Structures are given as C-alpha cells and as structure tokens.
Length: 279
Image (cartoon, rainbow, N blue to C red; front, side):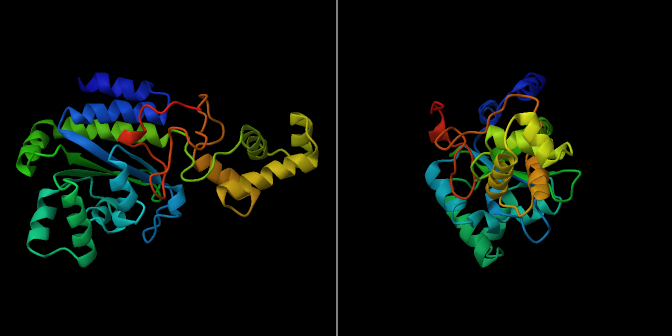
C-alpha cells in the first residue's frame, strides 16, 4: 500500500535505510535500477562543485563508473528539462528522437551508452525546492525485457502513486545529513561550528568545551578545509545547508570504507555495496 510505504520512508533513520526501502518498492512496479541526484548549489549554468552532489543508486558499479565518473550524466537527454522545471519525462520520446537522429551528438552518445546497459526504458522525475538553487532528479530504469509501452501502461495506472512516493523519498533524503564526496566532519568540528553558529567567540567556545583557544581555532581550520571554504562563516553556512550541524537524530556520517561510498565523483549506494558491514 502507498501509505504503508510512505510511513516506512518517513520513519527511516539513515540514507541507506531510505534507499533500501524505496528501491525495493520501485522494483514492484518494474523499475529495478534507480539513480538519484540532489544538489543545493544549482545556479542555472552549473550544478556547483560535483563533490557536493549527493547521489544514490543501485545500478551496477561498472555503469556508475562511466555514467558518473566520466560525467556522462551532464549530457543526459532528460537532465536539462528536469532542472528547468519539468516534473516527469517518459523515455519513449527520447528513444524516438534518438532513432530519428534528433539528439545532439553528446546526448546520442549518452543514450547509446544507456541502451548498451538496457537502461533506455523508463521514466525520469525532477524535484524542485523552495530554493532556486536546490534541484533533484531521479531516473527509473525498467527491468530488462520490459518495453516502453508496457512501462507506460504501468505509469498510466500507477503513475500518481509512483510520483508521490518519489517526492516523499526526495523530501526525506533532503533532510538527512550528507557530506558529498568529502570526508566527514569530526564530532569536535561539528561541536565548535555549532557554537560559532550560536554567536560564541573563540574564548567562549574554549571555556565551554574545555579546550585552549588555539585548539578551537585548529578544529575550525580543519572544518574549513573539509568543507572546502575560506571562512568560518562559510563553513557554518555550508555545514547547515548539508544538514551536518544541529542534527536531532544520531546520524553519524560514514567513515571511508563504510556504506556511503563514492561511485565516481559522488557518494552513493550500489547493489554491490549492500551487505557491507560498518567498520
């Protein structure tokens, strides 16, 4: 049931749990490979630093190594339409344009790549936020053997529910802490950033946390380096945007080698990652 799935998504406590619940549900509709991307740094001309984009996927690692690692996604035939406000796209018209030679050379290259991976039947969804800089996109590739006509029939019957489920998934994911392709902030770096955000001085923070002022400054410098910013104010802003400070639940960013891993220039989950235990 749709509402049962929505409740499970809303109750999930980690990105991995959200993704496992959601990919399992989408497979029931015939979509067995998903690729999700979300950035808060879209400017109309750029998606921001690619290291700051959150991606989740259950595509094979080899597919992601090329599609993400070689930036093929940047020329995806549906991407521009999604970031410009289109909410859902059937891949049928894209296949027709490809067959007629109407795609650009770069788009045709990407579509041919997807055809080789049996990822040319499905739908794409776009997610717009209140902020003009926050955009998300999701591709839902159909199980090999299904035709676009069959998937269009599924969409005709279940599309409203599928869109609703994916919107809720996006909203839930966008509330979760993430660090992109960067190493996570340490608990101490998070603590001192939170005190800075509260308006405390270096001397105040040192007294509160029981450290020397020089040590507090060291943690702030390392936080700036981790977040790739120049000033502490920028570090506080970026950590807040990425939900890394003032987190109410005990979500700990994954350490290198844990479940949240890099399939190219991003972090994400793939089918082959499942079952890896936390270190």
